[in-house]
Length: 267
Image 1: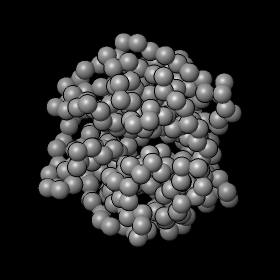
Image 2: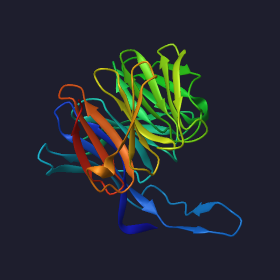
Image 3: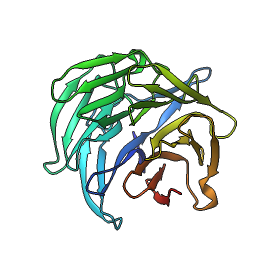
């Protein structure tokens, strides 16, 4: 069952109209049996509500749109259309924010995780199947045998480069060209741990938030220069969850477990 009043942020995205979109999903209670991993109660889509939350520039609520409680990540296609992955179901749903309804359902081979949109295509992690590129106009799917092929990877696209964050295994960020050739790989467990979410600014600097930490790592375009920032030095965050940047205004949006978002200027 959902813990009453306890939801967390599954994703943050700045819409083209400069409104902020967040994915709010429920946290479930679980029981732990001696000698086993956490055993989560399996609930259907209607047991609890997830929401796409749209905020105006002043932080006021614009609208909330119900989605599956198993929604995992979001990608803004345009100011009114959003792609949503579902970690328990092999499909991606396209949601119209104005109609507050599912516009289209895309079936996939496996449940999907991190997702982004670029040049009329969706780029998403398909777990053990690797990264897929799906053109929304032609429907053509290109399979890239890259990434750690694990759950919970996130994806970012910038200047014909694919960036993948990894929570498990490698615990870092990898950069590939569009053909899937590795350009650089970074990994460091000591400060940030696994990378939960990532984004790229206009100068190709990569920003990653640590798994259940309050650190952001900044990686240069060539993958060689690294900086760490503890955002709790400026604000009392409770576990960072998601991150996005505005390429036009050079602002960085960071959201924590409790759906609190802070905006930083990128120097």
